[in-house]
Structure formats: structure tokens, C-alpha cells
Figure: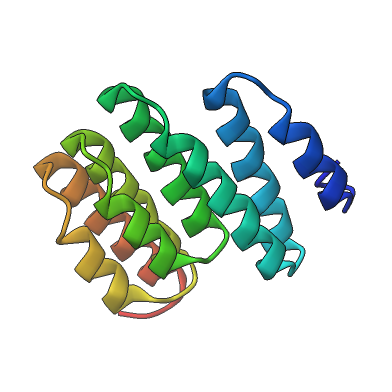
Length: 146
């Protein structure tokens, strides 16, 4: 529905999903579709709903995973500042590192190389930090910059 531009209906259906994990996935997907369609105000509302669902999840591991997915969806939608704010709320160190890696890579894809490097430097897991930096270099080379 979201891909067809029926955002109101998509959100109504997503809010009826009882399992919080699946509800957040649906809301995140809707928010990304909205952002890609230029409906940023609506996308912000969908992301906010997804965050509300995520914060109610009791288990740290599941909550961290859900927040990671939301941060990654925000980065994919170009909402880097919000993605970073969500990433900082992720309690699990590995999930936070994975989210920061995706945010850095999304920034590099749109040419924000310096900012992407700063985000990559925030990654606590050494291998993920190195992977992010390698992906930033590759994106920069692809863009024809040295």
C-alpha cells in the first residue's frame, strides 16, 4: 500500500498488527517509502510510531535489534541526524555498531564522506569500523574523488 502511495491506509493497517516486532517493521517500511516519495512529514510520523513500539519492547536484545532496524531505515531514507539519535539509544554494543556502520555507509553513498568517516569512528567493534571505512573509501572512489 505504501509503495502505491496509499500511506494513510498503510499506517492504519500497520497499527493493527498485534506483534510489536512486526508492527515496527511495517511502520519502518512505510516510513522509508514515504521518505522516498518526498512525504517527509508523514515519514517522520511513521518513524515516531515505530520508535514508540520499539521502546515498549522489554528485552534488551530484541529492543536493541528493533532500534537498529529503525536507525538503518532512517539512514536509508536520508534522515541521518535522526538515525544517529536512535543509534545512540541502542543498548547492545554490537547492534549499535551495526547501526552506525549502516548510517556511515548511507552517508557515503550520498557523498557525505567526511561525516561518514566521523560516524565510522564512533563504531566500537573494530572489524565493523574497518568495514565501514573500507566501504566509505569504495564509495568515494566510485564517486571519482580521491
